[in-house]
Image (cartoon, rainbow, N blue to C red; front, top):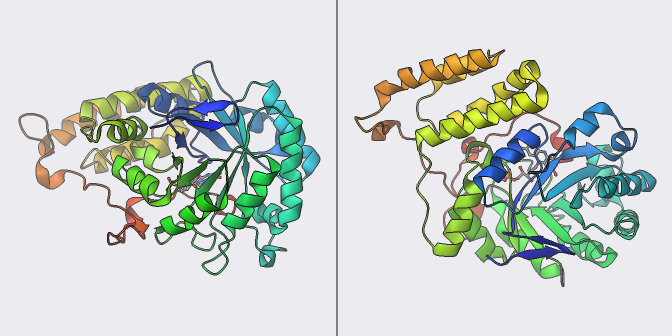
Length: 372
Ligand SMILES: Cc1cc2nc3c(=O)[nH]c(=O)nc-3n(C[C@H](O)[C@H](O)[C@H](O)COP(=O)(O)O)c2cc1C
């Protein structure tokens, strides 16, 4: 995999962790980094004004550590002075790049408000981003969808306008805003964005749940790299495996159950370190089930994890779960074939392979979808 330059920042390999509000906190980023293969991690989206006001919650969202580099912080807002001020503040804090959260640039979205407001006027948006680019030395990147709906796929036009303001890269989720998280990712749509810009890299995004899916997206779109979100929830090894697969053509074996437990335990410990035992345990109630998706039968674990309040509760649950799970394994501790989780299917259109109807395999947690 060739490294990709975001201005002066070299991203190697060009495999990115997408922003996932509620999840891409310091513990998760550290877990991903320890497993390797990720070139740049992004925080949850943060309100630019809240950052400037040094709001406690906003500062917690950008909490980082020496191991957590390079780090991109994603911000949103529509007031130029606030976006510029936040970018300067982040540069002073040593952040590697600033990503701008963008909704959709179609006129008819005007008046709907929310996260889309910024994108309703292409000129105004370009001016705002230009102000940010000129105010800092670190790269400014922009993350967008293909457009508002099937008929208004304006991302190529927007990407070109942003390139002219000096942004260092574009990340594009291959769905329209109207699609939400439904339907399939449109690789041809991503390709149009890649073809629209002249010199800056484009990172493709959406439904990459396996190294094979990453390869298909890279080849079908010509994008410089990919950004992975939900695929990393239940497979934090995806970056390392994708790098290995792209470099050698050999797909590394799935992590063993013992390795999954080791990483999940590490994730819990980092959560407790960063958020304290009480809050860390509550937050982990929604993290544990993602690991469990690849454990095989896990109803026992899933029932218990939503009640943990202390580290001791967690340790005792895992111990009991390991015993309970023995009924589903053979003498080598491997899941009996009928209990093994299914491989993750492709969910793309335009790749010469049938697009599987796989929505249920990539669940979307509840949250402020408007902004994504
Ligand atoms: C729970 C959740 C939170 C998200 N939060 C953000 C966010 O803060 N900023 C953003 O630009 N996109 C956000 N997204 C969108 C993802 O970054 C990504 O574009 C999308 O999930 C498609 O990629 P994936 O299929 O690899 O997850 C979020 C998605 C999910 C499911």
